[in-house]
Length: 353
Image (tube, rainbow, N blue to C red; front, top):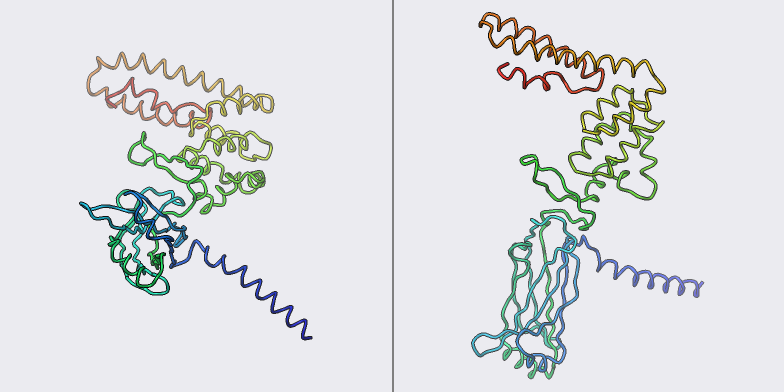
């Protein structure tokens, strides 16, 4: 029993040693401790201006924080500048910002000889760092009195929750701006996948995409196409096309043609018509007849518009009635045979209506 207890003690000890580095590396920690040790300090301060030493990075609130010491010069006197730096290697939003405060303790040997406070609003464009000046002579005196030639900077950083997304900057996409059709905004695939099961299946390359094809796509393929068009995701558009032409798709042929026309998928519409003629030749013949009727109506109205220019204003009311009926007819034809609506085609003939 005694040996068993000793064995359990060693297992628990090893387990705690394993958990300790995990706790230190927690990227979502609310606070963090930063360290920078300058050994052989007397030799370091003799280095030329611009010499730097950097501490290890620590993840806090999903951001990377570290300390840096550099040798600077003001007029003829050298001094050390200690930097608190926040980097955005895990950010995707160029407008991120994070307010943080810190207390930096300067330790010589085992003695805390100085304390510096710094902090502010960290962001990418203006301030990704804050710094403090420290006189070299004061630190050298402390080292001599303590008979120590090393100085350690220990900072406790307490940041607020950052504004912006903390997902990896990978697989950048663009989305159409609502204000300007030519403008685009950067987004992230992982961000979409984290908030949508559809995008999670579409972007995942481990086989989930095939499973998603047969689950709910008949009801949602048009919505997915709309999002793919808005977010300019060609690979999603391609998967929607493959589904619409697959045997798994249970959407009616007319509905497929309307979807193809709505999102400008001309090749898809032609493919559907080509494959449909073998399955339903009557439908293809009706499409040809209605298309011929459409062309005949356009020709007649073109001639009619030329003759109506010389008519009196009383006749123009009758023309408006004719135009209203043609508009209704054109809408019906468009829905039946996959043609542009007649009102759009005839605006050039009747600009004053």
